[in-house]
Image 1 (cartoon, one colour):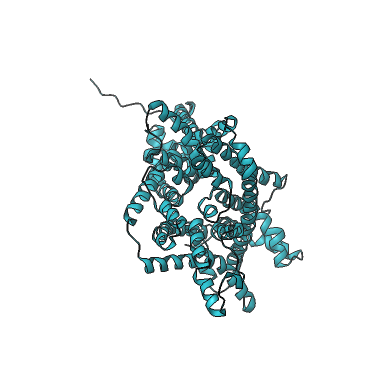
Image 2 (cartoon, rainbow, N blue to C red; image 1 turned 45 degrees about the horizontal axis):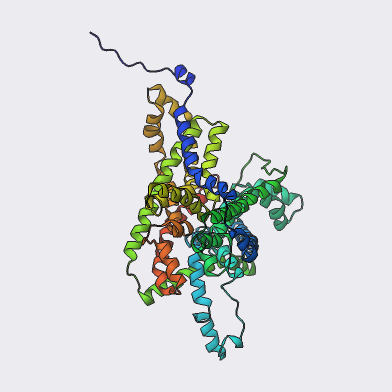
Amino acid sequence: MSASMPAVPSAKALSARPPGAGWVVLAMGLAALVALPVVVVAANLAAPTEGVWSHLAETVLGSYVANSLWLMLGVGIGVGIGGVGTAWLVTMCRFPASRHLEWALLLPMAMPAYVVAYTYTGMLDYAGPVQSSLRALFGWKSARDYWFPEVRSLGGAIWVMSMVLYPYVYMMARAAFLEQSVCVLEAARTLGRSPWRAFVQVALPLARPAVVAGVALALMETLNDFGTVHYFAVDTFTTGIYRTWLGLGQPAAAAQLGAVLMLFVLSLVLAERMSRGAARFHHTTGRYRRLPQLELRGAKALAALAFSTMPLVLGFLMPGVMLAAWVVQDGALSGLGELAGNSLILAGMAGAAAVAVALPLAYAQRLRPTPLVKGCVRLASLGYAVPGSVIAVGIMVPLAALDRLLGGLFLTGTVVALTYAYLVRFLAVSVNAVESSLGKITPSMEAAARTLGAGLGKTLRRVHIPMMRTSLLSAALLVFVDVMKELPATLLMRPFNFDTLATRTFTLASDERLADAAAPALAIVAAGLLPVMLLSRAIARSRPGEEE
């Protein structure tokens, strides 16, 4: 009796099969699961609220709308000027410390906005070192003897968020400027344009999509913020959702406020798309030459250095020094290990879950790049545009109803529910990284594996994942750091008597124990430094022809 070898399918036979039907079904199921909280929030628009809306309309709804709009406008202008200006200077000019600023300008990304808000309040309020020094220097006796700007205000919130969120614009604008060829700018100069007009009329329009994307990301983070606006007593939709849910005990009304907040985010996206109209911005030359850097000297060099270092100093160095000083002075490190452990567990689970869900979504899109599959991936990525407080409400409402049916608290207020919220919120970060990495693998390797008899799952496991290991780790790390800083969803959904570094920092700062809040806040900042360094390295290598 002779043994027969298993038949190896031919390439023609493989190509005749519809590939990845199971992966498409899996992607659709995952997309539906991730999009469920957003659907729940939208579905609650028609739910009865027992007169809560009329009460909100008569009292605070107007301030929610006005403050949210002013906050978006102010932060948008601030991050646009700071991000684009610094990106252009360090890309196109040489001045003292410009090479170091290329990566250092990303450091404020490691600083949560609410942490910066706490440190500046400690420095600038009446009892802080700045006003105390001014009173001692000029002999002032009370606040009536002088004027000092109020940090706990709408203007203070705009300033703090602009200093922390400008790296979103800087990162994308710098990458766009690095991709531009000197040939385009030389053409503008030969037509009589000055360097400034060449920047405004040529370089900036070419970078416009990247700049707008960076501003949009910053504004989404602005709408998601809770710690800063709550501490500065600025009423926005995010604080309104928190008060309506926990203060008034009205989850339906909180969900409706969340739906209105989602409309704000949608309006941002639609306004940007409409503003483009039929305009398109392209490089019209196929030749690429590296951008020469203009050597600045004297007053111009000092001005460029001052403009470029100001956001770094205000957004990272000063808050970091103040936090370190409080830690050294107070030494309140009790319980820090437990807080760090809780945060690390949550962040690790969320990072692993995000990669585990992003991988089949991206793989299904690679196998079947149909409008349906692409729509599922985009739907699953929607959560990044939705504030954490909205996602928390969208998860808590169905979980609370399910727990009532089960007769106990089996799902509400658990680590699993909180991890689910993180997955919905930050899945887009992981999907983008996995998509980019998967797209760099040539289809011929996949075809070779299938010709040798490997199925789609085995091909993913034995071919793609080993080649994508670094990108997968980077994706998990980015989600990890975002979770370490996340505050609104954690406050609403954390288990009873379960604190993280973010929630303990918020609680202590709300009790005006700023020195005690310094240690957990500094731990959050330290956790965010590594991915910032990775981002800086990736941007520095993005220039075509750049040497290692």
